[in-house]
Structure formats: C-alpha cells, structure tokens
Length: 137
Image 1: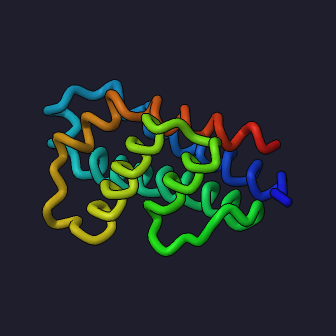
Image 2: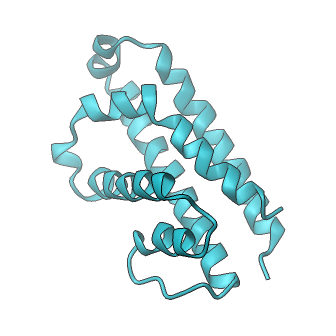
C-alpha cells in the first residue's frame, strides 16, 4: 500500500524546488551564465527535483509491487506499462534522468544552454509528472 505521508512529504519538497527554479526564469541567458550562483543553484535544484520524481516513482513501484527496478530509467517505463504514466511523459522523464546523471557525474561538461532551456521550458514537465503522484494521496 502506498503511504500518503511519504508521497506528501516529497511532493512538498518538489514544490519547494520548482518554486526556487521558477525564480531563475527571470534572468536572461547572459545574466544566468555569467553568475555561478545562478547556474550552480539551478543545477542543484534541478538535480533535487529530478531526484524527488525518482524517489516518488520508486516508492510507488515498490509499494504496489509493480516490478523490479535495476536502473532509474526502469521507473518511468514500469509506470507507463502499468498505465500510470503516458508514453510522452515516460520519454521526458527518462531524458530528465539522463540529465540528472550528467548533473551528478559529468558536472565538468555541463552545457549551461541546456540547463537554461530546462528552466525556461522544462519545469512544466516536472509538474505534469508531479500531478500523477498527487493522485496517490
């Protein structure tokens, strides 16, 4: 059985992270990349937001015994196969997971143009996935 308190706690953190990320949308690209506090904070909060989605998905998969997770990308795939997530969001979430891996492991090669684009155009995808988890409350 899915534990609502775990879902609620992570959804609240996700809301906090997305709210912080939205504040960076006011900057032009030049302002964003010229300030390490801007791009460094944005990168970290994007990582945390994606981690929240992964934690939420893993919790649902485990508590409902939906399948075996060997890789983070298994989570959206399982949720899609079980009818909780549509294919479009599955693909976007898998790309987010890849981006999270870049933020964590390939931090030397981060393309800040992509980070800025995610801030400007990708937060709605995070929020769309969040709504799927909110249905479990």
